[in-house]
Image (cartoon, rainbow, N blue to C red; front, side):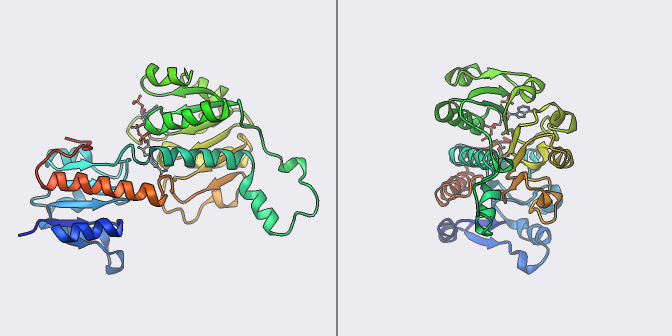
Length: 319
Ligand code: NAP
């Protein structure tokens, strides 16, 4: 009998078809009612799961009797209860590397758009307001040769450093839990304690994974340390920043602007951020290009079938 795979979010169609040829596939469908109840029911006799963007933990997985692998189509794995999955000997897999450059591109897109007021000026032009040349209040700020502070010099942080150093002649400062001399040397990057990085940087990008140490890593006291002209970018996870503190910093012009791809609660429906003109809000699209999403789906597929066929998946994070 074919093994059963539960697809818990929309995944690439081609990959879905490939899965259907080999396995008994059941798709969770939000239109059919409570998603967690559907998961709890379907996971009972499932061997594998694939998808992204859902919280999976003891509550909705407790009925599983033979689950071997959960393959997340994402690099971040903060939605999953790692300890529980380890206890149950269930592989949790993710998709690192294939989305690194695309997400770094988005970090720079946000940085440049916020620094040059691209979104506001686009709206202004389209509204027919361009009757004379822009006024000084619409001027942006230079990016070339400025100081770029990167919090979290992992895969994406490193790809951001490369763009800043080679593309924009920026001086790179970084903060991570461990110093990374081998990476830092390539970009002449200087290790800093967090406060020092915040005080010195013109542009700050946060690229940490969400974990117990990084939850609310940036709070009111941290925004107070930033320069008035600082531009703050978050492409990591919403919960690494105290969102209310960020809103206050933007409202009071404590900092110049922010560019956000991620939020404490997603999807972002109602937010004070929507009323602020010094913030750009994107709908969590760090890896959302057709090419990259395909590569992620392919890698997640490979992780899944390795787990199902009793090979250790290459990108398992908990076992
Ligand atoms: P990674 O290679 O694991 O890098 C994460 C880095 O964060 C590591 O270098 C780690 O440093 C650092 N870090 C963790 N906790 C820290 C803390 N408390 N203080 C300082 N540094 C800390 O992961 P990645 O591939 O670069 O991805 C990073 C995160 O970006 C993902 O986990 C995901 O949440 C997010 N992401 C978002 C999108 C999007 O669509 N917006 C797309 C892709 C990824 P140490 O090694 O020193 O511990």
